[in-house]
Amino acid sequence: MAAAVSYPCAKLFSDMVASMLFRFPLDFDYSLVGTVGWLGIVTVLSALASLVPALKAARISVRETLAYE
Image (cartoon, rainbow, N blue to C red; front, side, top):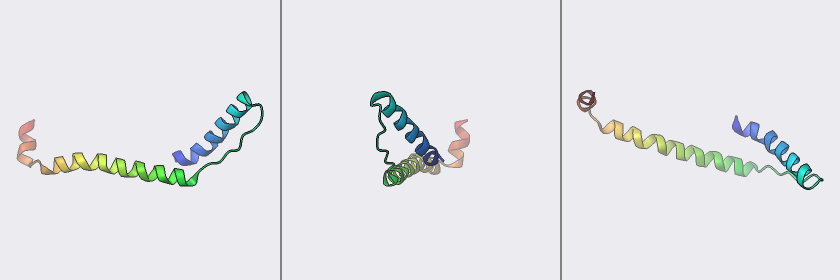
């Protein structure tokens, strides 16, 4: 959803900055490769961030978990 919203927002921002600073339109190029690349990086990092606590939790026995409370 964020990628779909980011295109029109980036275009609007580019147009606003160009009109305020340069008084003429700038070329706007939205990189699909960059979008897919960031999606891949974020997916891998979020999977790793979820995996570490899950592995630690899986090593704790039920007895230890109940005794902790």
